[in-house]
Image 1 (cartoon, rainbow over the protein chains, first blue to last red):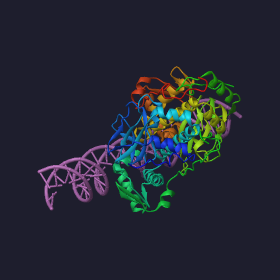
Image 2 (tube, chains in turn blue, yellow, purple, cyan):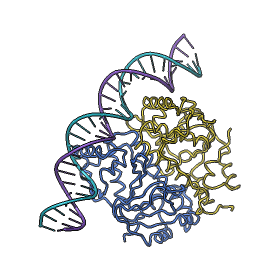
Image 3 (tube, rainbow over the protein chains, first blue to last red):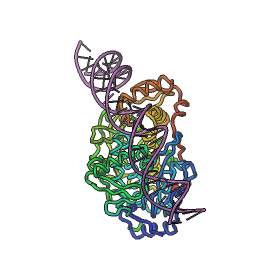
Image 4 (cartoon, rainbow over the protein chains, first blue to last red):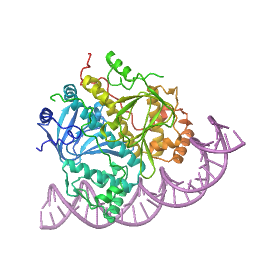
Length: 244
Length: 244
DNA sequence: CGGGGTCTTGACGGTATTCAAAGGTCGTGG
DNA sequence: CCACGACCTTTGAATACCGTCAAGACCCCG
C-alpha cells in the first residue's frame, strides 16, 4: 500500500514531528477501490472524509437534466469530501477515476484535531481556502473564457498539481481522464473537447489522450491561461503548534 | 451605525455569551464606504478581513480580456476577503455595490481566535465550507444550465439569503444589482440577461429592476432551480466551546 | 436642462451543442 | 489466437443559444 503523501498538509506550515505521527496514525490502514467505484453518492449520509494515497478521484454534481458537472479531480495527497462537513447529506459524488487507495477519517477525529492542535486546524482551514480559490478561478474560467482556453487551463493545472502529487513524468501527465470527463469538468461536450484538443495538438501545445497527455509547450500554454496565483507560506498569524 | 448581524456566525453552532462578547469587540468601530468604493483590489496586500454590517459588496475576478467574473455578492453578516488568507496577494476585488458599513478584522486576530476557541474555529471552518458548496453549485449552474435557469437560480438565491440578512421585504428583494452585474455573476452578457429577465417577467415569475426585484411565484422559480441544499446544525463532532 | 447610467430592442454572426456514424484500441472469453 | 464487445476517439452536418454591435428610450441627479 502506498504511503499518504504529505505535500498538501505541509504547504502552509511545516509539519512538526508530533503532527507527522498523528497523520501517520490516521493513514495506517488504507483501502483499495477499483476504477469506477463510487466512494460516496451525492445525498448519502456523510460521517467522514478520505485521505487519498494514490489514484484519481472525481467530485461531481448531478443535475436533473441528466447532465453532470465534475467539480474537481483529486490527486494523491488531497482530502476528499470535506465540504460535506457542513451539510446534512453529502453534496457531491466521489468516484474513482482510476484504481485508488485511500484512508477514511471520521469527522469526530477531525474535531479532536481542532481541539488538540490549533495550528494544524488553521492550516487545514487554509487548505480549504485554497480549494475555494481554485473554485473561484474555475468559475471565472468557465464563465468568461473560450473552450480552447479552458482546455489549455486544465492541462496546465493538471501539470502543476500533478508534479506535486507525483503523477507527472517529465512533461507527461498520467491522467486517466477521458474527453468526456474533461468536458464535464469544463462545462463542454465531449465532441467539442475533442475538437479543442485537436487544435491544441495542431498548435503544438498538447498531445496524447486518455491515459497520458503530453505538454509540448508549457510556456505557450501558460500564455493562454489567465491565473497564476501565489500562495502564502507560514503566515505570521498562525497559532503555535501544540508541541512547539 | 448598524450593528453586525450574527446569523452567519450562529448557523452551525449557537453562540455562547463569551463568543458574543468577542464578536461585539471586533465590530465596535465599523467604517462607512460609499457605493462604488473598492475596498480592496485584486493583487493588493491582504492583512485583514471585513465583517459586513450593512450593504452589498461584490467579490470579482478580472480577466486579461477585460472581462470580469463576479464570484459572489456578499450580504450583511458575511465575512469578506477571507479567501486571501491563503494567498500572497488578494485574489479578488471587493467593491461596494451599495453604500456599505463594515468592520476590519486583522488576520492576527483570527489566529488568536483559533488558539483561544476551538469550537468557534471549527464553526468558521464550516462557514468557509458552506461558501465552497455555494461555489460548487454556481459552477454547476454556469457550466451546465441555460441562461434562463441561471437568472432564475440567482433570484431564488438572493431571496433565501436576503431573508436571513434582512434585505427582503415580503417577496421583494432590495438588490442594487444592475443587469450588467447580474451578467457578470452568471457568465452572461447584459443584453442576454435583459432578455431572460423579460422572459421571467412574461412567465409571471420575477419583475422589477435595479433597486428592487419582486418574486411573483417563488414555488415556480424553485421548480426551475436544481439545488436545495440542507445544512448541518450543531454537528456532534464539534469541539467544546472555551466557556462551556 | 444636460448627462451619465441603466434598460430595451433588433439584426447578425459565431461558438458550442446536438445528432449521427464510423474507426481505433484494449481486454476478455470462446 | 481470433472474435467480440465495451469504451473511447474522431469527424461531419445542421441547429441553437448566446454574444456582439448599434441605437434609442428612460430616468434620476446635479
